[in-house]
Length: 219
Image (cartoon, rainbow, N blue to C red):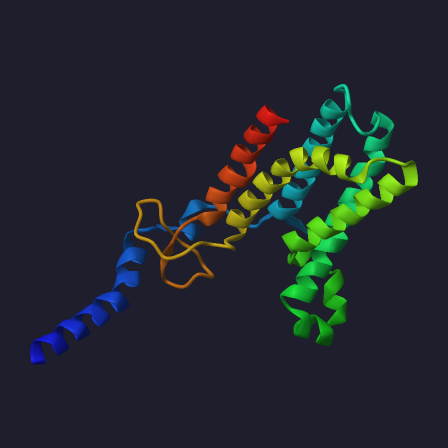
């Protein structure tokens, strides 16, 4: 019984010490020379997260025009500008309201003016999807277009936003993965003194590059 007790205690001690050991040998996010803010001029700060949104929207817009030029498209090129406008509005409003309602409703109930501070971050993917879908619905009903068919074309453009968005998550040091001891494990500032999977980069590759390749090949 005494030996079993000692073995059990040694396992507990090893489990407690392993994060520190992993963290000592892992890559530290702070050593990668990345920062969420590109530059600051007075009260204005340009963030990588903002550029990620802009890049995703602009490249998605460009790709949408290429898809519309193919035979059988559910809309004409003249609809593309309105679609991008409504979709962008849906991403921003839906993403922000989704974050407020799903993740921190108590905080924003007490601090309602903070809702408008988009530059401080805080967007919900689920809310953005709902907002974009509603924007497409508005465009479709306004112009007599097929709502579901437009979704097919928009879906082909989504991987661009996901790719840049996940890279921005990595630069922000957020949405990290589980504890691990792999060679590329990273210690993130908000993840404790523990080496973790850089899940943002995995998702950028899978949700961004791989998903785009799949849709490009089969659509």
